[in-house]
Every structure is written in structure tokens, then in C-alpha cells.
Length: 113
Image 1: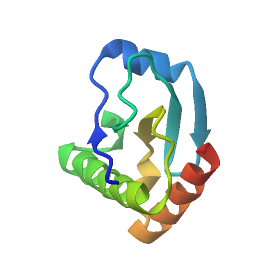
Image 2: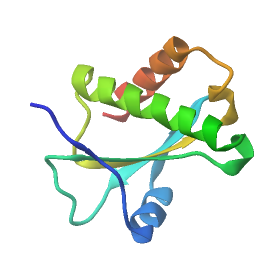
Image 3: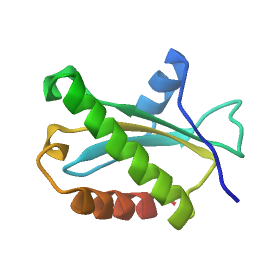
Image 4: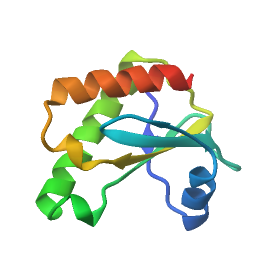
């Protein structure tokens, strides 16, 4: 079963997730929790990169990497569809290899179950 990835849209959803649980590593901080009125057949994930990290090209590169990693994670790891995720990138993502970032994120997503 392929679950569709949908972005968070409402400001309330972001604020609600920021007050719930989090997992952090040297590449990202992942806030996660259950949201009210969430469709359990789809996974809610939003990616945030701050302007401090760099210009629009660099920020978009980070978001593309994260989107690709999460698509792989949905296929390979059983992610809890009851949770919504907010992934905030750190500046160390730009200087490291894709493979290292992917392994670290997969380990954190395994912890979240």
C-alpha cells in the first residue's frame, strides 16, 4: 500500500506539533505527534529550512533531499500513519553526503514507532 505524503497547511497544526514530542540529530529536528481530524491513510509531513541556512537554491536543495529520503522511508520502513511530522533542517545538511543523512534519518524514524 502506497501512502500519499501531504504537507501540513494550517498554522494551528504547526503550533500544535511544536508543543509535542521531538527527536533531534545533527542534521534535522523532527517534531511529531497526533493531530485532530487527520486522515490516517495519508502521512502529513512538512519540511522547514530557515533563511539562516543560505539562499533559496540551498534551501530548496535541502528540501528536495528530505522529500526524497521520506519517500524512501515510507516505502522501506513502516511509519506510523497516525502521526504528523514537522522536519526542521539544520545547516549541517548542506556539507554532508546524502547517504549519511539518509542513514541517520532512517534510524530516527525507527525510534519514533
